[in-house]
Amino acid sequence: MSQMHQQAALSKCPSCAEPLESGDRFCGACGYDLSAAAAPGDTPTLTMSGGVVPRPAAPGDDAGDGLPHAPRAQPQPQPQPQAQPQGFGAPLPPWTPGQGQPQRAAAPVPPASGVRFDRPAEPEEYPLQAPDPRVASDAATTAREADGEAAVCVACRAGRVDGDGYCENCGHAQPRERDHMEQESGPVAAVSDRGLRHHRNEDAFSLGSTTLPDGSPAAVAIVCDGVSSATRPDDASLAASRAASESLLAALPRGVHPQQAMHDAIVAASHAVDALAEEPATAREHTPHHNAPACTIVGAVVASGLLVVGWVGDSRAYWVPADRGAPAARLTEDDSWAAQMVAAGLMSEAEAYADERAHAITGWLGADSYELEPHTASFKPDRPGVVVVCTDGLWNYAETAGEMAEAVPLDAAERPLHSARVLVGHALDGGGHDNVTVAVLPFPAPPQGAGSA
Image 1: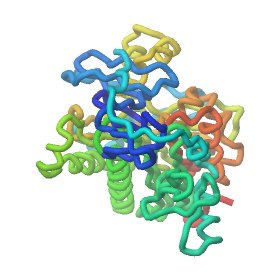
Image 2: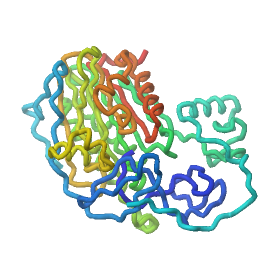
Image 3: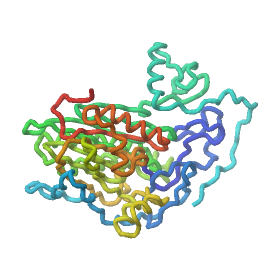
Image 4: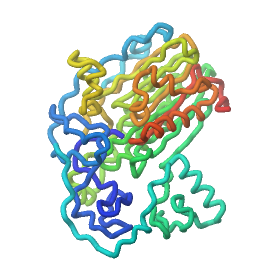
């Protein structure tokens, strides 16, 4: 998940390693005083700040950067998507004539000493690791059906789950609704998963299908990645994905050009995230150092033989042709430190993305972002295929277009939901270090009612 530098929240108890909820003051398992401990946090990606990028922790290190805020750097000119390989089809002009140009709108900090409620060692109370989220939701559903109203713990398979979502036997937190989500809407499908290392899912997606004024079908997919060091990143991603999807599904049937509709949808998503920062003064008093809610966004529209993408941040869209003899292509350019280094000719792409500062994002949706500049691009592929829209939780394990094409099943256009599940599994099998969300859209858009087999 994307991350901006700031004081992070504890994700697990320093004493017993049990997962924690945001705002917890004491561990619900062992009673450890959390207010006395420094808060470690994840650092998959960071935002630029005054030209200085906080040093992320080493891979596998959960410690936060612990650096103070600094003025954010001014954004650099964003590169256009690279020329697509032969066989994909040439990019269209930025805007269709007559539509009009849219208005641009450190080292880890060790835990401090604190009070611990010591008690005799009872190792049998905490022998369980977190369950694999790929089977947790199925296990929870089976348990509820077998037990009627009372749910059975997905970890120990014995204890009952209390009203707060914890097992009365082993104390393990149960899967939340957003830990694993799947949806299919007409020809487009998406899957989102918490991953194997995070205590909650801060990604979100929204899908839809509609009909253009000429009766032809259109499919829409929006994917958002919450900025994990900001306040309420999960709320930000959810608000943005819903607002963008609603805007697109309202504009396309009215005949608005898909590229203009995508631009307007990103603006609507930005306004929705900005509104989350308008909290009561009492809320700001309790969390005075938190950044405003923020997220990245990427979306795709398939309509009338066009493929339109739009984005802000480092979530991506890929083109994968059905004929794997033709090359795949990445359709977006990251708003990130690495992309800026490559665009400036200072580093090769391999060197830039190997740098620890690579995932420092330079663009995001949120009240404290720069002036919003939605990126949009239109393409007209000359052959069938699929569009993969995803967060960095997936592309970290399939970064190049060729690697993504290898991970996408050959029958993705006929079975988009199955393909999205396969891609999420690819990320989890690779380590699942981040939340992972992926949507799959067939091109061209099938008639209304078509979907996975």
